[in-house]
Length: 176
Image 1 (cartoon, rainbow, N blue to C red):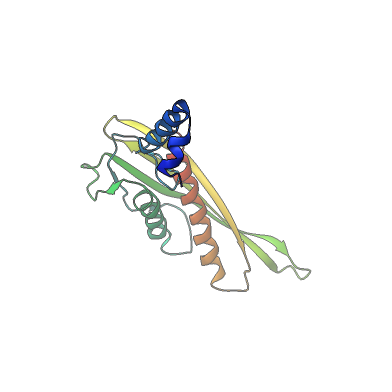
Image 2 (cartoon, rainbow, N blue to C red):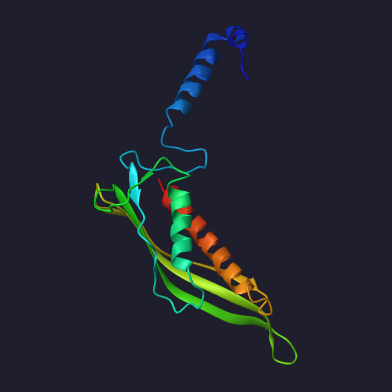
């Protein structure tokens, strides 16, 4: 913490530079403490329910990923959630295109001892004010689990979705 008495003891040029630096930090109003930056003209985002076009046996993946997107884009930025996508400044859409569950390790009696869930999601984030795409990418993540535990496939799928949501958020908010 800098005390005013300390500033008085600095040479005039150094004090001016220190004050300018402090002032410029407050000018970064489009940067959040999470490290996310959002274009100035965007104030709202619509996040429709993610579409699950995969052949997943795990239910609720679309709800889970939608909630993860809301958590990152609304709760960790200055964007407000707009329910009506035609009223929003931007819209984030996700589509789960692939769900794969394959063994990665097999025992001597040919029983799977480890499985890997891989999820692929196609994501677009569209700036509706300037009619430009902000993100148009496919994201993929995997997580391994013990197939002997009945609940572990669902947990692995959800952990893969968390990784995807984090990757989407990073890609969307760090390219400015």
